[in-house]
Image 1 (cartoon, rainbow, N blue to C red):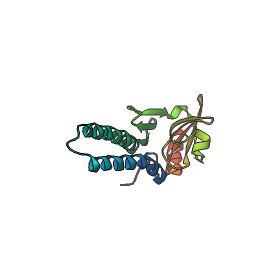
Image 2: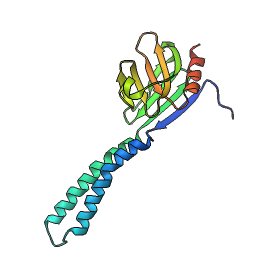
Image 3: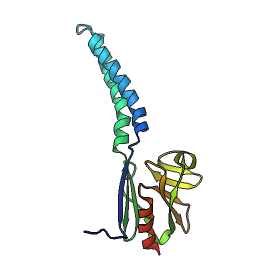
Image 4: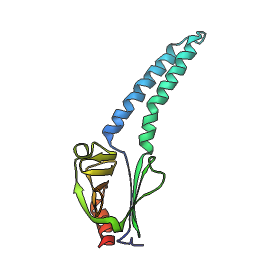
Length: 167
């Protein structure tokens, strides 16, 4: 079934190799410490259980950020009344940008760190950004508020879908 040219749906996740390398350094070190403690501890020693529980707490603390980043995702949907954005787990409800308030949507290449301070829900000198990876997106200009950038792997398709509704 052909897709309606005015509809659009995209789901993005943090999948950069360098981010996962940084995130996995902590759990790797903690796991090594935990295993070495397990191997070298004397089962008859009462202080060994304290060391194991401390290692488990450290392991949970190291794995927690990895799980958090794994479950973060940016959903972008175009519906008949506006652009819907949900950045899980930060948004429980959709952020709705009504078409009546959007003046223009244009695909852009941007510098995530310099322009917005990185990835995620960011505030920068150029306005607000919702992005999870890459350096491409759609810049929405509004009639009465600051611009919003929505990161996208297919910025041309997203801007076309938005502009089809506002023109």
